[in-house]
Length: 288
Image (cartoon, rainbow, N blue to C red; front, side, top):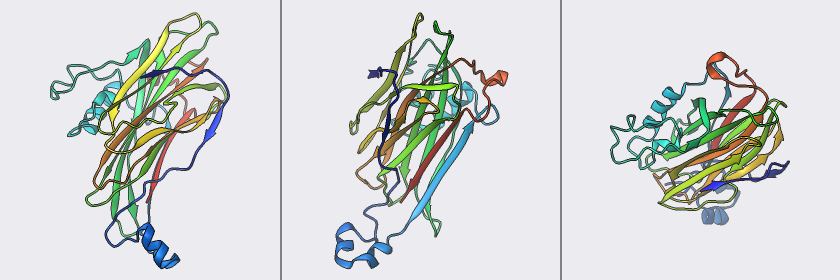
């Protein structure tokens, strides 16, 4: 499904995210806490995990490298690698995955580069509750609009996998714009999406003034739960955060994606060192 949002200043903030262990052996449930009071609540094991990254030429990967990341991240899953880095996965890349089709999903955009950033939710004893993989992929319009702006799409993708007997309920991925010269204009998803055990399509289409329409789309699959945009701040120095809320199924794997549209008079090109550090950053976090 392709979405188109009006460009305007808007801020929506919802609750902060976290990965939450539920239904764990030896852990107080909600009813146990009610019966036993604060003492039982304090016995719940806690764990945290997070990662942040500046998107710059020094730590971003080329589109070809991101193709490898996409194939590895979705190996042994029902998730298409095109959900991780749309437009970089060719039929040739998928020869080892003949059951999945290569879907381009990118129009009038060139891939600039991307980054992958993973972390684990771990408690004080070193127990891993979940592994969370994240990627961000930047695309640039092939031409400027009538006002001289280039347009960019940032594709976010996250996958959480519960470890052994553990479970989780939520995780997030966020992109931050850190320079006033970059304007956050549109985003997706604009609604809560709940499509359990079926492919979920997400995308964005924007018509450039005096130019072509740019678009990007991809699909992923969630086993249990829903995902949405939990925070959006448009305009200069904006931010966009996507969040998964689940049912706490043990040993489940879920993946989500989102897309953010920016415009800037700067021409960012990863391999000509024209993507200065400090323009974009990403942040992902979780806790039990």
